[in-house]
Image 1: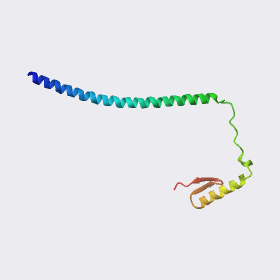
Image 2 (image 1 turned 30 degrees about the vertical axis):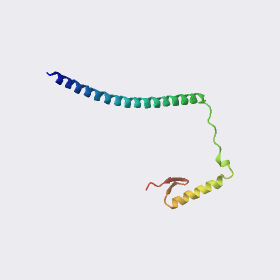
Image 3 (image 1 turned 120 degrees about the vertical axis):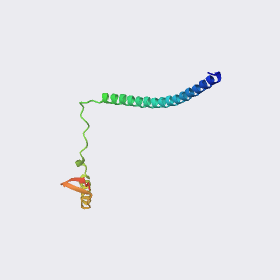
Length: 110
């Protein structure tokens, strides 16, 4: 084997390895970026868990929830209710809603 042929083969191999090295570095950079994104997302989820846990610990599970105000006590309730009913009835007449039972309205699926 001629010495110049040997050096030509060494140069070829060096070029192949340099190309593989470059491709692997690009892949490593991409994987590093993905890993950083996952680590950031994981940190956010852990912070969310800690926050939710601390908020849940502060709640008294046996305490009754605050009662919702009685809407029927409001002086305008009958007028508001009648206005809503009449609008729902108009939507039934136009075929947009169906009154399945008295006072129970559903959207038509056709």
